[in-house]
Every structure is written in structure tokens, then in C-alpha cells.
Image 1 (tube, rainbow, N blue to C red):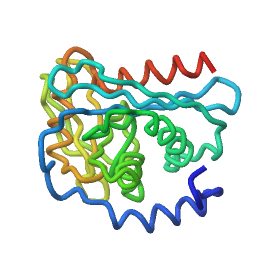
Image 2: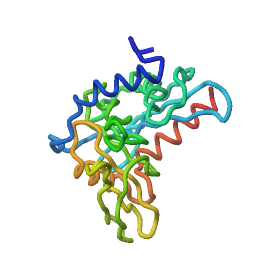
Image 3: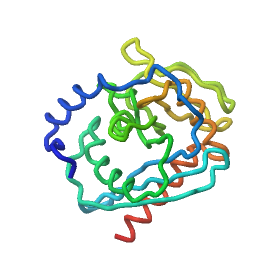
Image 4: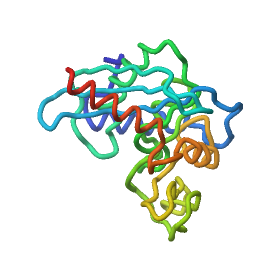
Length: 221
């Protein structure tokens, strides 16, 4: 367990409110990434175990370079907006097993597209001091206009008059995904990199690899 990790929803919200001011999403990546990692978790239908995976891919070829997984008891209750507190400990345990250092993390979730502007990608990026952004399958907050039918078409995701993400079509006539900057990357950079990592399917290859790995780890536990 991370030292002083919140144990109650109230403590978790307080920590998000404190840390949100440290998030930086105003500037683009300082250099093109060599290694991009997807992070994802899997939960059993019943039980108290969570499995986490970090899948590192070569940013140019999208070939898998290394995968690390970990399992642990679920130590925080399920509360929308606070899922990071269930997931981050096991993800950090998996990350510690890697021999390759990722340049960017792609989280299966949200960055600033969050009620307190501090989703999983913000928290994970801040803790690892590494650029991170979220790519989600569904919207959590915000509204948006129509998205064109072609790959690469996108529109702003807006909440409270603030742009908190992009709704991006990654495949022609397939449901869009929701991309939001997390930390040390701007929204345009997050959107562009999400498209680069999504060549054949709706979701980035980083997310697909991490999803497969954490599900396999959960079955093996």
C-alpha cells in the first residue's frame, strides 16, 4: 500500500482536490516517445482481487516490447470518480517490474475529463512524473456536438464551459472514443497520439495489449 493512501471516499476527494493543481496539460510533449505504455486493470465477477497490467509498445511499430502484471486485494470501495484509488496501487506494482521505462502512459479511463479534473491519467502521470492521458470507451462527464464519420474526425468534449477532452473517431463509422489529457501532455498531443496508436481497431494497441494482459493475470491468480 502506498504510504498515507486514502481509505475513505472523503479522504480520496480531498487528495484529488489538493493534487489537481499540480497537473500540467498546457504544453506539448517535449520529445517524440520511443516507448508508449498502456495501463489497465481487470476485476473478477466476484471476489476482492484486482489485476493490473502495463504493456509497453514501440511507438513506431506498435510491437509489444514488454509486459508486466500484478495482482492484489481490492483495497478501496467502488465509487465513480474515485476508481483511481482502487487501481493505482496494483498498476504501480506492475510498473515496478518493468525493465523498460515508458515515455508516455495511455490509461483506460480519463484525464481532466473528470468532475474534479483529476482522473486516473492525471493521478498516474503525476505519481510517475511521466506524460499520461486517458482514452475511454464511454463519456463520464461533459457534452459534445456531432462527430464526423471518418477516421480522425473529432469534436471538443465540454464541461462547465471548459474543454476537457476530445471525442475522436478512430475508425470510419465506428463509435468514437473519449480522449483527455492527464499530465505533461496537451490535449492536441493526446488526441494525435491516440490516433497514431489506433491503426486497425477502435481502441489504441496499448490499451488492447494491457487489457489482454490484465485479464490473463486475473485468470492465472
